[in-house]
Length: 126
Image 1 (cartoon, rainbow, N blue to C red):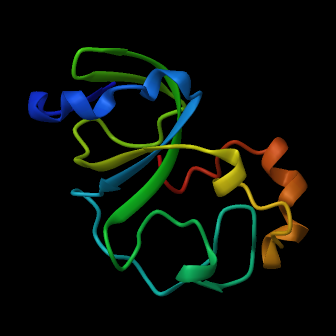
Image 2 (cartoon, one colour; image 1 turned 45 degrees about the vertical axis):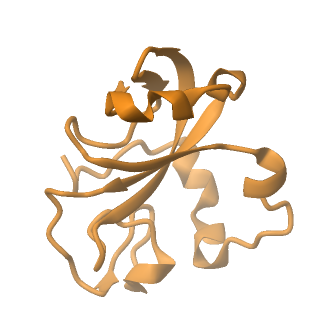
């Protein structure tokens, strides 16, 4: 659940028609990591900006959550990948026509793409 300040509650008007939302957050407990990492589902070192590794030079995250509903200033979400208490900077509706790119290429990840259906975690972040 995302609890927003009540002064922002009017901004939630009409959000319930969307199935997913984009959430921008501040990773307040994160410490910056290395600029070259071995990403999940890979064995080669990659530049941090070519990965989805959580320890970034700048502690800002963008997540896609499934919107379950609203109750006042509370946004009920599923598929959350943030810690409880993570400060939320912004919420936007997920619009497939804007946010999903059918012509996108996967770079190095193309070789690992099928593994993500089989491997849930490699225990590095537990």
